[in-house]
Amino acid sequence: MSPRLRVILLALALTACEPITIPRVQDATNPPPPTPITKSAPTSASATARAPQPTPTLEIPDGGAITLGVVGSNTLEMNVMPEFLQDALFDSLLQIDPATGALKPGLAEAFQVSADATTFTFRLRADVRWHTGAPFTADDVIATINAFASPSFRGAPVTDFGANPRATALDNQTVQMLALSANFPRLTTAQLIGTGALKFVARNGDAFTLERNADYFRGAPHIETWTVRVFPDFTTARAAFIEKQIDLLPAAPGDYRAIKNFADAQISATDARQIVMLILNADTLPLNDARVRQAFNYAIDRNILISDLAGQARVIDAATLPGFWANPNTLPRYAYDPAKAKQILADAGWVIASDGIAKKNGKPLKLDLWMEADDPILEPLAFRLREMYAAVGIQTQLQLNDRPGWMTRAFAHRFDLLLITRALPLDPDQRWYWQASENVKGNGFNFGSYASARVDALIKDSLRVNACEPSKRAAIFGDIQRELAIDAPAVFLLAPKKYLVARDRVLGVAPSSFAGDFWNLNQLGVK
Image 1 (cartoon, rainbow, N blue to C red):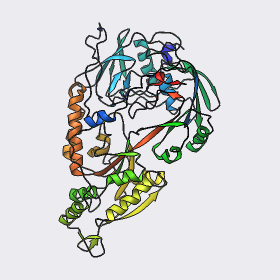
Image 2 (image 1 turned 90 degrees about the horizontal axis):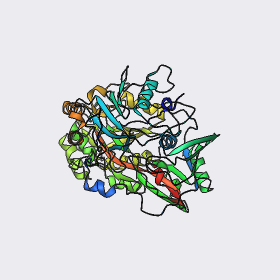
Image 3 (image 1 turned 180 degrees about the vertical axis):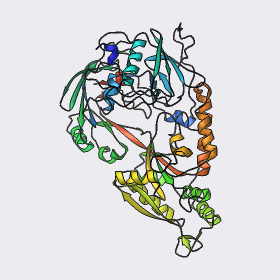
Image 4 (image 1 turned 30 degrees about the vertical axis):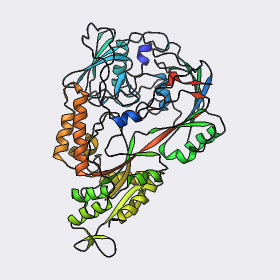
C-alpha cells in the first residue's frame, strides 16, 4: 500500500462552518504565495485575559525521553485509540487556535468556503512530508476520502459528506470538496504512518514507543523519545505517577482532589470544554412558565457552587465557554437574588406558605431533580442546589440513576429537573440542543422540550451565513444566547476545569481548553 493510502486526517472541526482565521484561496488553479494571517475571531477583554499564554521563552534542550500516562483503550483502532497518539502521529488540514477555538492553518495553509457553505477549497502546504519522506499532496487527501467511502473501510461511515463524497484535486497542492461539513472519521491501519510531530516505533503490551520526527514542518520536537502507557483507570495511573513511573498525566474535572497534593509536580488547569447545567423540563408544570424558569436562575449563587468545587470551575452565563469566539459579551445575567426569585414566583401565583414551601391553589412547588449517581462534580452540586431552592420555597427531591438509566430518562424527557454535564463541540452550533426538530422523545437532544420559533429561525440563519463569515455567525450566536437567557430553558451553572499534571523536569507545558493538552507538543522538553 502506498503512503498516500495510509493517510489519516483527524476531525476537521467543520460543522457547516467555523471561524476562519487563515488566508483565503484566491485562485485555486494558480495559488498565490501564503499571506500573513490578518483576520481574528471576536474575543472579549475577559477572554483575552484568560487566554492560554504562549509557551514561555526559555532554553529548551534537545534530547531526552518522557513517559505519558493515559486512561483508555490500548488498541490501535483509530476510533478508540488514545487521543494523544492521534494528535502526535497525524495532522489535520486545519488546527485549532489554543486561545479562542477558531481554526488556523494546519496541513492546509489557506482555505476558502463557497457562499452557500457547501464547497470547501484547501491549499496544501508544500513543505509537508510523510514519515517515510514522501511529499504530502492533494492526491493523498483524495485517496483518504475514497478510503473512508469504501465499503471495506473498518471505521465509522462517512456520513457528513453524504452517500457519495466528492473531492477533486485542482492541482498538486489544491483540493476542492463538496460537502455539508467536513468531519473526517478515523481510518484504521496497522502501519501508523502520518505527518505528525512523532513517528510510531513499536508497541509492547500497554505501552507505545514514539520518536521525534526530525522533518516535522512546524519544527522538530525537542524530546527524542516518547513512551505512552495506557492504564485501565485513573487510580492505577495516579499510582504510577506517585511512583515516578510516568512524567505526564491528564486528569479529568472530578480528579482534582486526587492530584492536588502531588509533590514535585506542576498542575496546569484549563476549562474542560464542557458545561454543567440544570435543564428545566418545559413540559412539566410549572416549568412551562418562563417566569418560573427565571426564578430558578435567580435562586442560585454560582459562586458558592464554585467554592464547593474548591474553586476548580468558572461561572458561566451561556451554553458556551467564556473566552470562546462565539460567546457574546452582552447577555442578560442572573445575579444571585433570592428575594427576586420569591417575587417572580409570587407573581406567577406561587406564594410561600407557613411551612416555607411555595404553593399555588394549595399545590406545593415540589419537583424531582435527576442526576447520574456517583458523579464527583454533580453530586455535591445537587445537594447545594436543593438547599438554595428550598430557601425560595422550591422543594426538590434528589433522584440518582446509573448511567444507562439516566440516559434513558433524559431521552424520554421523564424528569422535572435534570443536572447534566454537556460536552461542547468546537463549533458553537446550537441546533442539537434547542431546536424544535430535536424535541423528539426517544432520540432528540432537546431533553427539556424547549420550543422557540425565534431560536429555530436564528439557528437556520446561522447555517446559511454567506461564506461562513465568522463575525456574522458570532452575531447570530449572540442573539441565540440572549433568547436562551430570557426564555431560561436551563440554568447555566459553571464550566469545570481539567488538568495536566507534569513533573517539574518537563518544560513548556501550556495546555489549551480548545486545542488540547499537547497542541505545542514539538515545543515541550525535559531538563
